Image (tube, rainbow, N blue to C red; front, side, top):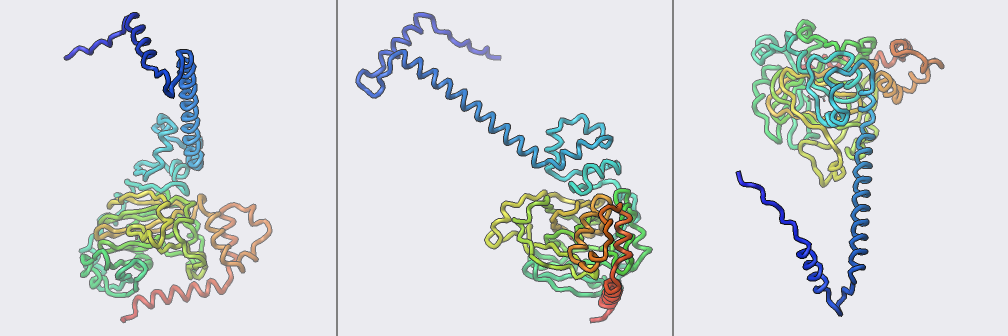
Length: 413
Ligand SMILES: O=C(O)CCC(=O)C(=O)O
């Protein structure tokens, strides 16, 4: 090992020599006419200047940190919740916990308490240990071909761009015979809301996890209850639009095969997402439709320059993982392989007020029927009151729409 060199301390005479050299170098008639005293006072000014700069830098750093923390105030609040923080999290410094909220969390053994305190309505989460208990985890292409190959499904075929799609109904085996033919410009996507609903035995292969057991949609009459197990089976390159789910519900997505990529946008970024104004879902119990024309996996920045400012959390979802998307988050999925998944939704104590608000924004007749004390009611009473007061014409239209959807699929074209 080489010994570190000792720094040479100049002797007194050497330092005096240096001082006199310095003085000798001061030009007599030049711009610099400082005398030794002036040099000392200039050094003092430099020192004060440096102290000021350091102080201002610290002030700036502190303000930046403070703003960052403030902008995460929702997340901070959840960590204040008593009795819900795991032992592991108690030992992690708060700043690190906030940092962790920048990405998706993969969680196993997540308690219901912690789910409600940390994730529900606040931050997306991938649950990695529930699907393993479902009989559906054994679903394969062969199983579907053998058992349901002749059955008809609905699908979307897209050519050129995300917004140029056409819907078709055809036998599952015909659809699957083209499942490996997706290209970046041409893809097909089986998006069928009623396939599983019409096959209750098959639907039983999916077990509702504890996080989704509270679901006020089950109090809706069947005519207007959203179908709650959409089968999604896409070629490589297939994708959804960028959207918030209807009624602002909490969405779920369980992947059985393939690879799904996601971009999720924390609420408060609508100004960058070019959301279509005034669109409606056309559900019998109607609601606003919050959709964006942007394909976030192939964005057209010329057309949508503000989109550059939007911040997404991006991640892959693998088979056996179930995603829970909080209310109010714009999201888009992209299948990077032939991918099969089932999506669903809940209305629960974490989002029921938002869902009711979305329903009442559009259904004015229902809103006019509400009793004066509606705001004082609890969640279950609120939902049952709404259902009791539901106008008959909405229920009638619900029956018609459901019948039509079933008829369309079974119609040979
Ligand atoms: O997996 C997908 O294609 C996305 C589905 C989705 O976003 C939804 O069901 O709301």
